[in-house]
Image (cartoon, rainbow, N blue to C red):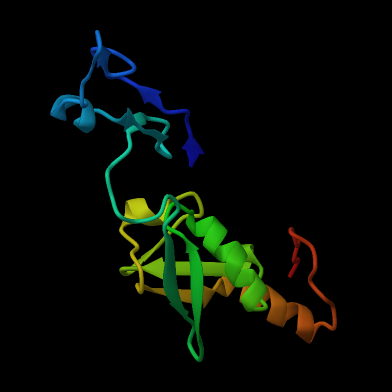
Length: 156
């Protein structure tokens, strides 16, 4: 997420609060007037930042389960499923292209944002190995070859 410089959009009667020899306390309107903070959403829209008690970059913990194990991954809420796959590749032995992430019964694309899909703190995501790549690995091991290439041609 991109942070932009804040601008003050409020006029005050006087900058110093002095009128003649009298010192004037700031009015309630001037107290309410503060800096407007802006944020750039992932879609590219510039909007006024929402008031919340949470930190600027919210970190969520996602429980990713495989068939036999589960992993708790901490990641920013505004991350994509592709970035989640990169974090999972460090924990598991699967490369990101070998992974399939399923959330709420649907396989998710790498470019989908977690917060836009509705992933929240403590949600569960299912990790499966891509069956086509798994089959290629097994076929390669049967033939005594190692498959390290991104593109394999198999002739039968």
